[in-house]
Every structure is written in C-alpha cells, then in structure tokens.
Length: 333
Image 1 (cartoon, rainbow, N blue to C red):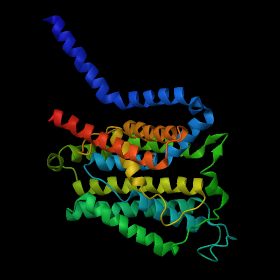
Image 2: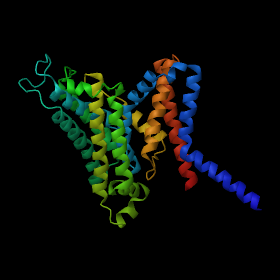
Image 3: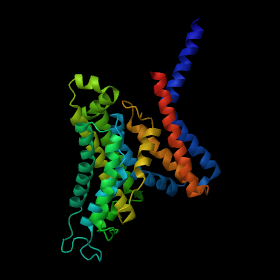
Image 4: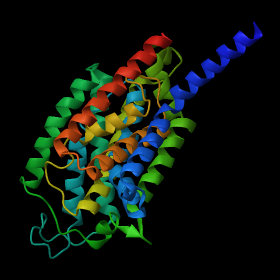
C-alpha cells in the first residue's frame, strides 16, 4: 500500500514538474536539435542575434502579461509601438535632417523624446484600460478599435512617410556596448522591473486577484477600475520601451511599423504559461516563451524554411499553446 502511495506521489510530482517547467524542456530540446543539424546555431554571434531579435516582442510580452493575468487582452500593441515610435522619431531627428518633421526644432536631449514616447504608449493603452474599466466593453473590442484608431493616427501624424536621420544617442540604444547588444541590456532591466512589480507590489497582487475572481477581488476592497487601468497603462509603457529599441535598431520608423507584433507578444506569454482565463502567469514564463519563438524563427531560417511556412508553423504553435492552456484549466476545474 505504501509503495502504491509513493508511486502516485512520484507521478504527481512528475506531472507538476512538466506542467511548471515543460516549456523550458521544450526550449532545451529545440536548442539541442537545431545545434545538431546546424552547429553554427551555437556561435556567439548567432546566439546574440537570437537574443536581440527576441527583445522587441519580448518587452511587449512583459507588458501584456499582467493584462492577461487580469483576464484582459490587448490587440493594439503593435500599432502603439508604431505611434509612440513615430513620436520618438520626430523628436529625435538631427537638426540637419532632410526629412525633418518639425523644422526649427533644436536637437533635444535624448531623454526628452524617450519620455514623450513612453507617455504616448502609456496614454494610449491606459485609455483602452479606462474604456474596459468604466464602460464594461470587452477588452478584445476596445483594443481592436484602438488598433484602427492608432494606425490612423500614425498616418496623420507622419503624413504617411517614414521618419529617419536620428541623433546618434538613439541609434546607440539599438547598437552594442563592448560587443554586447544594448537592446538585451534594456530587456533585462525590463524583466527585473516587471518581476518586482508583479511579485512584490500591490500592482501584481491586484492583477492576480482580478484574474482569479473579480467579484471576490472587489469584495476584498480592491479598486477594480484603478487596477485594470494600471495594468493597461504599464503595458503601454512597455510598448514605448519596445519602440525605443525598434527605432534604435532599425534607424527608421514608418506608420506600418510593428504590424503583427502584438500577436507574437501574446503568443510568447501564452506559450510561457500565462492563462487566457486569467489569474495565472509568470514573468519568467513570458521570457522563456519569447526565447522559444526567437529560437524557432532563427532555427527555421538556418534550416532554409520558406518565410511563408514559418508563419504557418508559428500560427500552429500559438493554437497548440492555447489548447494546452484550456485543457490544463479544465482539469483544474
């Protein structure tokens, strides 16, 4: 009888380990398989390339994770990265730029355009949160509408033209320091800040409570509207950070920039275990999920897989991750 109990405990522990760390095992297996087929995958330059490519949608994933934990969604991330990026670009152009948007504007200290960029992201996403909190409109609809509005604002603001000729300080943010990518350093800082907010502050406690049971959260004294607006506003700030990295790396921002990035960011956090049902999710999971997508993309490119097929594979993985998430939640219920 004792042996049967021990066997059941072992099976249960194994199931818990796989449920908690399964995505890490998937990442390790992917790295091993790709390395065997294409040894150049493990080269320092390629690994740094994978990390750098994962930064933009990884930062966006950090922002949307608290939103999904609070049982929301944000489909406007890509358009907000584009709009905040255009604001950043317009204020960061050198004085002699031929396509200068604001003629006569002196070259500003780089911190000024960055703050403006973060504020634009925070206000756009924060307004979506306000609509969700105050009107009861589903987050899906509110952010879908925001996507169209902000894309239109991008075209109006820029006149439909890309903005280039940035000051060196912005370009350096997309470059390297001592051979190490600056975007990765920014990403690591964002990971630490988001982890602290989600695990050691009222911000995170409220998000988990609302996602777990919004009625119980309200009864316990949580200001639901304030908490919802806060998670969306934070998501907007992360979009602003992603826009800074994007502008520094690409050295150009156009109205259609970051199109589809929101789906990649949502996919990253979902693959990492953040439940679409709310109340469940971790920052480390979102980071690993972003790495899985980054390794997958890089591996498919090294293997010479057609770009169209890459999109099909990514889409299938997203669907699979959501199905697994639904089954796990069904079992818990």
